[in-house]
Image (tube, rainbow, N blue to C red; front, side, top):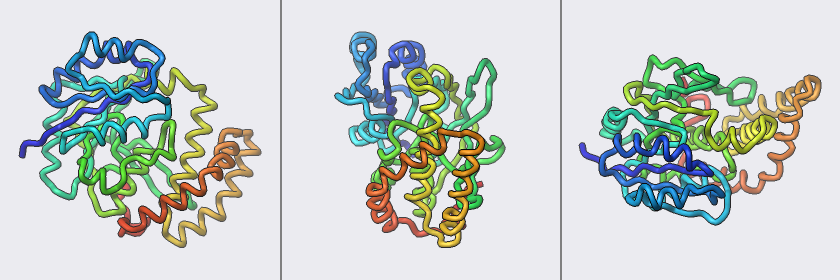
Length: 302
């Protein structure tokens, strides 16, 4: 089946990365729509795109409010039935699109992920497939081996999503701004709603993580605090199983005490910070419980 495809690239001060990687995107996607959502960059990103890539649609945001907001804005404006999200630090192989699209012939498939040749401190690590489990009331996720098509989530940095289901799910939750956990959250809500995720190892991209906006704009401590905060928000938003909730309530104080003992200030600060978002969490739970129909312990995570 032939699908209309839109490529969405969120950008924050990524002029150099766009110059390096956008030609590869153009070569790989043919005449597909390409949208760059600029998250109030302070570099020459927009001027560069206007001058060098006039066929690329540019959406300019006036405020820097993070990844999820940029992606949601791009999806709303996209004309494609399938939206492909690519970070500015991602370089796709020329034939990466075809293996992704074939999975959407199955109507229940929501998203398909690529295999990432992830460049990390001059070492290439194969990423793109995730595994996860509930353990002592916490959602534990990790990189999975790339030897099966089952995945617990599809990365927002290099993945294809069916727009109609994206809209039913409400897109990425901007509570996770500025970054992390928003793609895991969206994927989990899709699985709990009965939709499918697929990992496609024949679709290959190269991802230079160290050159992205997160590593360039935030310290390690800031990144860790945000990651911990968003882990708690994910659990509080999505968890519905009573036994898992009891486990979470029992083990959270224990984990906080352990964090204090090992001087993990990021976890303590992230936990306290998460309470600011309780009103949003409650609204999200009411909204998403109407479409979720699978118990947490039955969600296919690995």
